[in-house]
Length: 149
Image: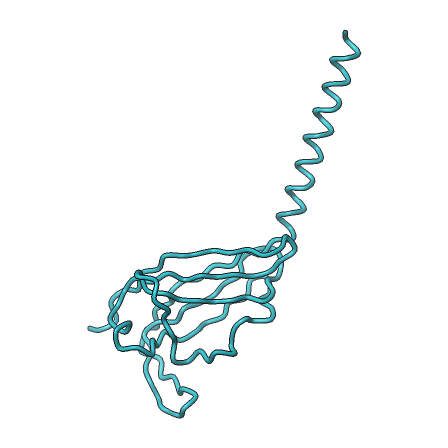
């Protein structure tokens, strides 16, 4: 009976060690991509692709604060009803980003194309990327603060 208990304890210890090893490996292979609004102290003057100059009070910043790089980073922004928000300084071929290294930030000027989205304050940011653990996704509810004085 003592031998059986010892074998069960050994099996349990081995299983625990394996699970911990896999969890540590998964953590080191994973990117942790998030997004946040960065308020500019003054409105940033942004020259758009068509040559017009607009002012941006915010940048939507994509940030990888995980231990591994993120690849093929997709970004989609929607209003709270689910309608897509197109950003003026973000051409259709800008995403996916091929690689976002550990600690890297990627700012996108917050200039919605549609007038209906310019005054809106709440949005959903959908991020999707590949890392050493496969495809990851995150949907972030975002709220932009006041920009006019």
